[in-house]
Length: 133
Image (cartoon, rainbow, N blue to C red; front, side):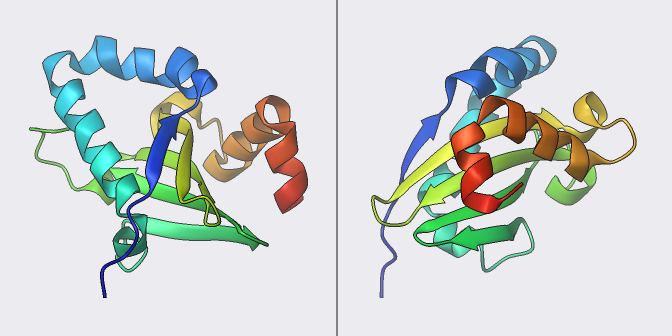
């Protein structure tokens, strides 16, 4: 059975605060990387069957997911790269919202998980309430 293809939306916050950094740092490789992220998010059901996507939390028709990705052309595995996306899956409407796109080195002070949760609490208060972050 084919899984439903999800529509993918990069949230403005992710674009302004994180994607810009990847565009500057990786220039030509970023376009291919972004296309890979889009493809993985469109087929998120398949990604959740691998070790590249981790289900963080569920609530009603929503799921919070952490997705590992690698920069195109750089020979480092997605897990080892330290590059992550935090996604909100809206299963009812088949939408994946890319909330954060970051390098572990960019946001991590001591605790990466706590840091991205703090960002979600501040920037996405509605989502924070859904998952009690």
